[in-house]
Length: 390
Image (cartoon, rainbow, N blue to C red; front, side, top):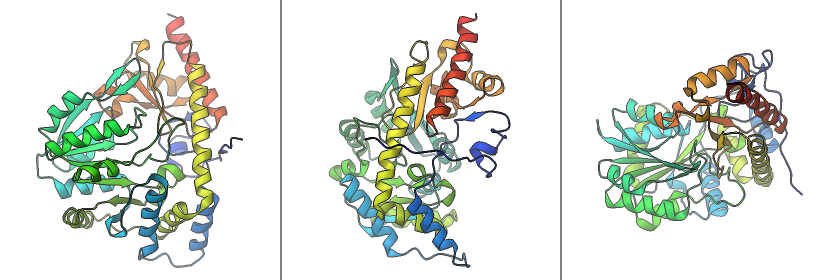
């Protein structure tokens, strides 16, 4: 028997997603910011409440138990062996990536990404004085793959490659074969790899997440992995994330960069939340129920749009659905604006994720099926007005 997650009312809680404009008052369904409308698992809530009962919220000493929990999680859940000394904690995956780039590059170095891709990659690269090299993913009939010939051409010029695994927003969960090819190319050209694996637990049926570290360790490649409990357990506001770096020299450089960027002080609630998330059995069941819920929402949305010219990209990982709306023949910024103003849906325009995102929308599925159905009905209304009403 399948189990599903229930949503909670987030309106008027100073939620960035719900309260940047008053979504409830204006009857808007917010499907933009990548956090969820599901309650954080009760064991995590209980751990945070218990810590909050102590009336001092001072600077925190992260205990050994924290790093051991991270290592044990990846060992038992994903068969990737790490040591506590490899773990570096910080406030978020974005601050982690920025500090790593600062640590391992020189001014005007080139950093390779695969577009369309998470928007903060662009700013993290440019804010550290580096140049962006973009390898456009191949989109064939709505399915994304890697242009390995162009990837290698770009890798010859790059000092760093930022991998998104699973990929946001294209929804790909890269196979071992694909990861192996990327790793070998990066090794051949001495490219340091930053693997952003923040969505690694949100995997759809029939697909498997492979930690890039397993592949990189096999090839003795220089790399780091970045992860957080924030996407899986809906704890982004607790500001806790980790870098796993097995190379001592790079680890020292990254710690120096984290301190230089002043993002090495984490809060006590994030520490307690992570330890609980990675050690409490109930949290594993939460992941199962989460993935059931996301997948059924994806199937629901796909079914609603099946008789349109809108192309739904297959969802392998993440809770973010990527759709091709080029059938409207409009700039995506205009489509997003019209959907928000007249059709009650707030989504992300694809151009946030690079120029390859023109003509696409990203839709957050981490909400109730009722909201997904209502949002798809609004999108169908827009479609009928703009396509069938021409």
